[in-house]
Amino acid sequence: MVVVGTGVAGLTAALRARELGLRVLVVTKEAADGGNTRWAQGGVAVVLGDDDDDSVDRHIADTLAAGGGLCDPHATALVIGDGPAAVARLRDRGAVFDAADGRLARTREGGHTAFRVVHAGGDATGAEVERALLAASRDGRVPMLEHHVAVDTLRTPAGEVAGLLVLDGGGVPGVLTAPAVLLATGGLGQLYQATTNPAVATADGVAIALRSGAPVADLEFVQFHPTVLYTGEGARGRCPLVTEAVRGEGAVLVDSTGARVMTGVHPLADLAPRDVVSAAISRRVAELGEDHVFLDATHLDGPTFRRRFPTVLAACIAVGVDPTVTPIPVSPAAHFSCGGVVSTVDGRTPVRGLYAAGEVARTGLHGANRLASNSLLEGLVVGTRAAEAVAADLAVGVLAEPRLAACQPVPTVPVADRDTLQRVMSRYAAIGRDAEGLAVVGSVLDVSAVDRPLETRVLVEDAALTLTARALIAAAAARTESRGCHVRDDFPAVDPSWAHGLTIRLTPSGQPMLDRPALLARGAA
Image (cartoon, rainbow, N blue to C red; front, side, top):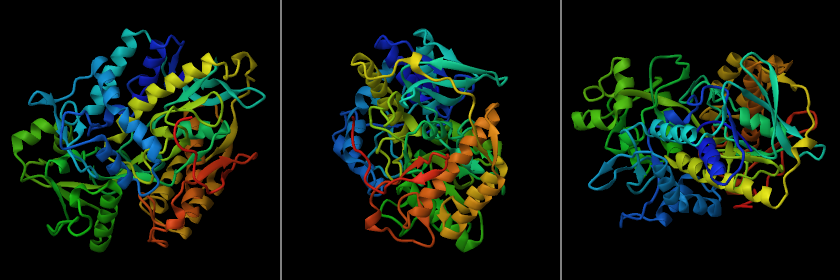
């Protein structure tokens, strides 16, 4: 089994695969700790059963409400129901969460109706999860191939996945044969100029899955985190996140006049789901002709803030803002892909031998808008289930023989200029979209893309961004409504007839094509 990615989903899957006696190799294009998981601040949303004011059913209801009618209820129940066991396994592997009053401390984030988000290091949960999983992987002697970028799958004449084509840091190709490949490559934040994602989030897994014959779905639903530290006009690359938990502890959004942004917008006010808050901020800054608002935490206890949010504090101090004295300048930025490779909660995709887990996967948990802190939960649960699915599929002999894999040269595919792509995606395919702007994105990509053989990591990444951008705008143009993270200025209302997912596949010529607009397969296969 080859696992692509060293975040929460990939490492959880690799550890579980080793426990099940499988041979496993983990591949990552950076150092092992270079993924997105370590940047997660808020925590893990989970109901541990020691709070009479909360329940699994209530967590499920909050998730479905945030998802705008597109969550798969069965998948949602399975993932959330597996949450307590997943967190227990993580703690057994060495993760240390914050405690208070003899139990795990909890906070509340946007869209949650209860305090159920467990956290570590105050606001450094992702860093602790990644530390624990990496340490467990090294202790368990999970082999890792660092600084190798995944280019394409190896496939049998029948189209089954049976290995992986990679490039090392010098562009030298290599072949890894295996009956199962698990994509755990993370997100696509580098489609946009400003994002909370690190530089590695270039949609590699989406592109690999599409070229392997797998469908993707719900790519139009890109969540923009509402409170990213504003560092000046024209900010580029990874921008510091101001965790939603700051609002969970009582901070509020205000504009430059001091007026509350979320008053009258949603019953949960500043703790409304992220799509609602980001859209409200976008409307307010447009009305005022400005480019950011403020998160006011000055009324919170200073020592408590410093202890609870050390990561946020350090980022603010670095730009000259003391959040205990001065409101924090914030604006939305690309944060999380709610869609991805169509898969079950067991990680299985429609292509035999290809599995997906974590942000790259579309399991049905997130729908049109992810509920805060459900992402680490999904990575823990689906990573475990995917390894178990591979073991089960191997046991019954349904996976391909790796020796049947055909070795092909590196693919030659369209590659657009990254700077151009990011500029048009940020301008026309971010929070507010319309048919004219989406058409502009398509035209610009068509003009700027040049067929190139994927002989370097940069070309692999830029090709993945190009293909994923094309797939995203195809879905965004087709969905003529506003729902969750997908806001169409020319179709501002929710249309009940669009209460289903949209799938994209590649044509034989390699162009993204809208698949039949029908409800996607539900649940675990």
